[in-house]
Image (cartoon, rainbow, N blue to C red; front, side, top):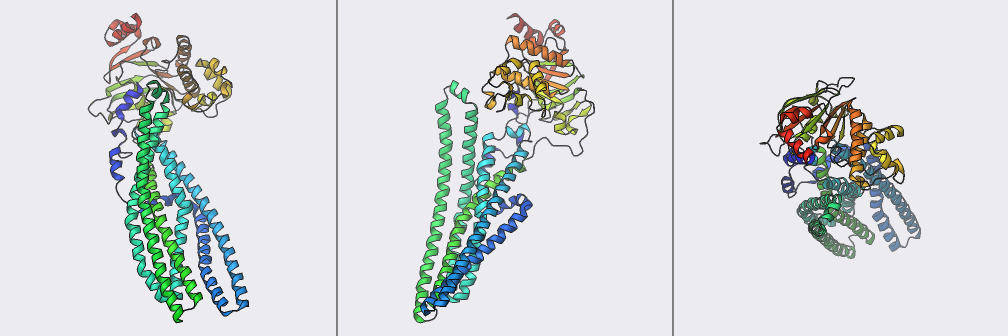
Length: 608
């Protein structure tokens, strides 16, 4: 079966694409700098206009913020001198500064939030567009739930940084720089004292920040692991319930959630310690400065307004540094999320588009040829799935592949569709080597009916038209009739417009298989690949579908994988496989008369 043979490729099959699980676990413990965020620049660069607008609004907001202490100090001095006219003017100026500050802040908020939404939308699209093109080996290496977690949770973390934290960080950097400058102008001596305390504030940010970042990445990985378990279990909910495995599934998911919680708790603890230490040091410094400033005012060395102005700047600087300590941990968390997303974008498929691809001959004929092909799955390099396999299928010919499970039948399909490349030998379609073709151009000439049909959460008509965009309703219904699916579709509540549920949960196994067959019929490709396509059908439906397949086979090349020999008795040729090699080739009658493996299989199936 396809899933049995594909399972052989697990593990090392996708090793070049993503690190192995244990390798990723080791990487999670490493502490790297926020320089990982530089990988976001290609997504920010197309929106330079928004960045400039945001920075301009940010500068204006910072300037007006720094103007507030000056106005406040002048008001206090004016009150002390009893100058009513100056008080009115300074309060009016104070009001104007507040209005401009509000306007600049609103503009910054709008532009920055919009920029964050736009960039994250671009990242999500880029990651999905890349991942959907990866070879099957990639998806055998990473859980779907983990990929979804990176597309949702990790991008949300980055969005909060681009859409809020980054602009707040820049604003606070400007406030720190501008505040220190104004403090030096107001009271150079007191400013020197404040600057002596800065290293005491920065040290815990650097030391604890590294710990926070490592814990942040670990927390995100734990969440992704829990998502993967949930996705895998929910998709198999009927099987879980049938085997009364609910309690074990709950414990498994609960353990993953608790691990994620514990990781998050450690991160929050380290972050809280960092913020608390920084705030304590900052306000201790403010108390010391206020004490010295009060003594200077009493001594007449500075006015009360100048002290108030200096203290406001000191509060601004202290608040900005405290905010930066908290934002730093957010930046580190976003750096971890960025690494995980860039890891997906950096993954490279085992199947690459050739540097100089050739074009397939036109019109298509559907001739398939395997020439001395040997292939081993990377996880089992000592066991060949195919060994020196040579087979030519003429245009319009129907060939059946039969043999025991693990004989290599499904591997033939996977190599033909170029999901993997063989270690030696060559595969050709209409005389063109498949490894010299664009994968999409190659696959466009095949229509596949897999053993386990894939049904999407959409209408019956949309599922049939999958792979044939723009197909008319008449063509969809004709394909359904040919696949013996029309009658049951018409009996659905809304006919062809009926929603069939996620993975087709509203349909029976046989109904899903007939929709998959109708999909292949509508695709009208020159080569039809059937992998146990009628295994879930009742006898009446199987006969109807078999008649349809026979009519189609007269117009195209058909390769059938079958365990039930009754479905392939009329094939032009039957290829008997075992151990990745061809054991015999011939018609049903000839192979039965010849004896051997096929005769044994026929005797078991037709006499019992």
